[in-house]
Picture 1 (cartoon, helix red, strand yellow):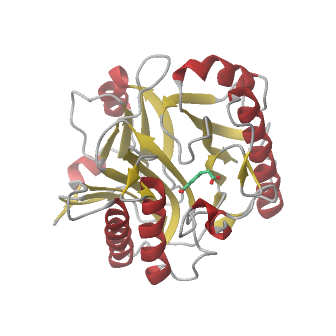
Picture 2 (cartoon, protein in one colour):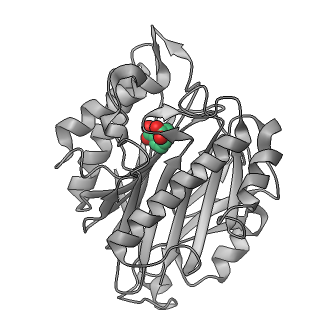
Length: 348
Ligand code: 3EB
């Protein structure tokens, strides 16, 4: 274990605001990354890449996902803080903290003696342990990535094994399970270990349901022996802003998948789901998400890149048009799902 604090000499050169400890997020062209960060007064907290290897190193967790970007120049998702950060690194886990928010990444290889359920269990136990030790006990947002998500492993689909291990760890260790479960994404990479990125806070957040969908943690056993442990969205608030972390959202109504084989219809159903979550957020936060947001970032996970044009067209004819959208080629957690959309909407 190693604890690193950025030296005061670096800090003095930067403006530190006490009231805005929220992280900023943006998509930055990979080629521009070193320059963008060098010119910024903010501290990097995490960098996420999509099927790219960065040539420079950065003083923060770097999460390289084998999720090929479908179009446009290679982008990275960059999380920065205007407040001094502390880094915590060990071989499996890399964490950046700014006093209010923690961003971390856990990576765990599977093996002959570690099936996907065991890997998920171990990873989640370790993450929760870290969050408690470091003083950021409230989970705000989780991203889960692993390869061959729909493959069978000894009679049970790997995604279902993942849900089993995650559920086992969280029921044991997460206070107020399941109402404290955060927004999440779980999608399949082309290769790599189990990679989990997580955001946690010193303060609790508000977790939302979608009235068009059953809570995932209440899904019947048709979808696996233990239900997926996540909320449809998570809302955080500070003096300056409201922020909605929208879970990976798909063409699921109630608990059933809709429009098998039809990428455009699935995208349209997904957008209706997203709008229903926005309405919930509006009730909970008292602000209008569409039209008044300061910033919105979306990721669209596309199972088959041949349906990219149709999915993109459906998005361009929706309230999401005009926002920053990254299209990534990924496998999704039910075989019939062809598209999944997640987002981060910041207002204020
Ligand atoms: C769904 O609604 C689609 O297992 O963490 C979306 C977001 C989905 C997160 C997860 C699964 C997860 O059930 C699948």
